[in-house]
Image: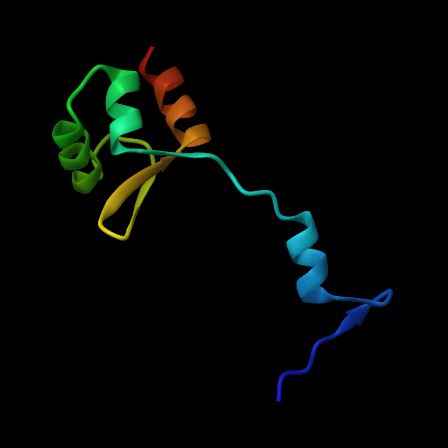
Length: 77
């Protein structure tokens, strides 16, 4: 049995979920269009994890957080 702690009448899970904001992500096709490269090139680049923004794979698709891509683009200038 799971015990849920209450803080001012709100469970910790509810408190965390109410303060969590999802972050925008781009898939390979969107990153490719933005950088003027092919999606295959972007997939290979993200797979290597060398000098690229932080990325993750979900359901056989690579994604990049928009904020990480923006930071990476600024560093490349």
